[in-house]
Amino acid sequence: MSKMDNTHAEKKSNESSLESGSPDNHSLADTNIVDWDGKDDPANPVNWTSRKRWAHAIMVALFALVTNMGPTMCAPGINELIDDFHITSRSVSTLAITIYILGLAVGPMFLAPLSEMYGRLPVYHMSSVVFVAFIVGNALSKNIGQFMVFRFLSGCAGGTPMALGGGTIADVTRLEKRGAAMALFSLGPLTGPVLGPVMGGFIAANKGWRWSFWVLAIFGAAVGIGALIFMRETHPKILLERKAASLRTSTGNPSLKSKLAHTLTPRQVLVQALGRPTILLLRSPVLLVISLYVSLVFGLMYLLFTTFPDVFEGQYGFNTSTSGLVYLGLGVALIIAMFAFGALSDRIQAARMKADGVQRPQPEYRLVLMIWFSPFVGVGLFIYGWTTHYKVHWIVPIIGTAIIGFGAFFVLMPAQLYLVDLFGSEAAASALGANNLLRYLSSTFLPLAGPRMYKAMGYGWGNSLLGFLALAFVPAPILFYKYGERLRAKTVVKL
Image (cartoon, rainbow, N blue to C red; front, side, top):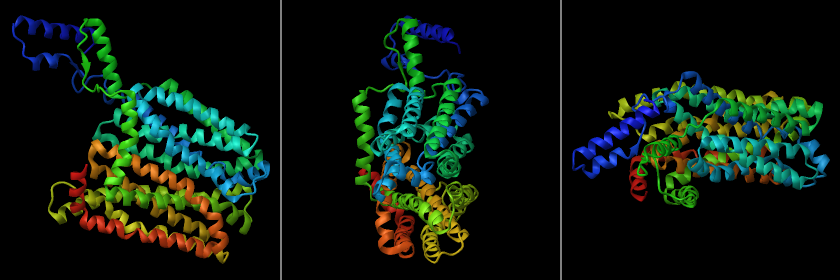
């Protein structure tokens, strides 16, 4: 239905009500609510052409890919950076890599509420410009202080696709067709941290560490320009508010309002976005334990990344260009895990439903794969630690990292789906926000303990300690699977 047709319909509806002599308040209120013109309304993003919808899915996937290359792209050239800035502290050199992840934790807390007030598209464009600007700042840094500030701020902007990408995918796809688009979007966070150092190694070896940032800035600018060309606003709330504003002007009816309109002030939206995840985390033991487990595993992953230059360049004689290739073990494992998850997840749900005689899947069914594969994290750390300690052939510790990555995937993905199923659509965003905040904070600060720990304990016992910590959380999903329904009832009451 066109805007003109819609306006005539509004006028006709209002005139009919007036002619009837006594319109009830309910029918009058209904005529003032602006909604889509039926489920096939072409203005609704889910009804856009297939090409236009996939263009948005591809763009947010590219955003996620580029910004997730940021944490590790400079890792292979870190020794050259240390020499240029005369860094003597191992903790500072580690923080130079991981402080970007702190930005990923902080930035979305403020950017996500902005999208609720002004739409997703302006936030994408603004953060793209800021990301590229501060990545260029990294390339031009004159000292470690400038470098750290620019790196943190680029991370803040780089968190945008992780905060908004899932919402954009949901805006342009119907639930039954969302799987392929979400799989495409997930490739960015999975392959970015692996592709980054593979490219960064060759760039740093031939052009120097600063060119790693120049190349990343070029990629970011290209994706930003692509977004300007192909992306449009997709947030239903913003689109319906625009439609309501247009109808208020054309009909002269100031009472018209969007079906999705809310009365919260920008300050209230921000306070809610910042406060709800913290409150939920403190009041739900399930969320707290699962989030601690995920944060530990990802902190261990980034701690592992900080050992690669010393292990593979120092012990195994890799040069700067080839040292980035050691990340491929993790990358291959994550991709294999993604396909394995897709093949097993639905089958396990169906099998458990049949065995339990229920019609709807229970949230705890998501934990089965975590129970099976999460021990791989600890096993992989043992393999990596002792093979590097005894200087076994370099392929064996890389296999160890692949096992760690495989297990880590089956901690993260089931945890996210479990939390979504557990808390429902209303509270899931806050639960995932709390989970992500702890994960990024751990990934930022846990690696700082690595240099002293490895100096005191060596790679064998140091990684064994981390492996035991990872295994200590393995009983958690087993207990939640067994007693989840009881805990769920208590959690729902508290919320």
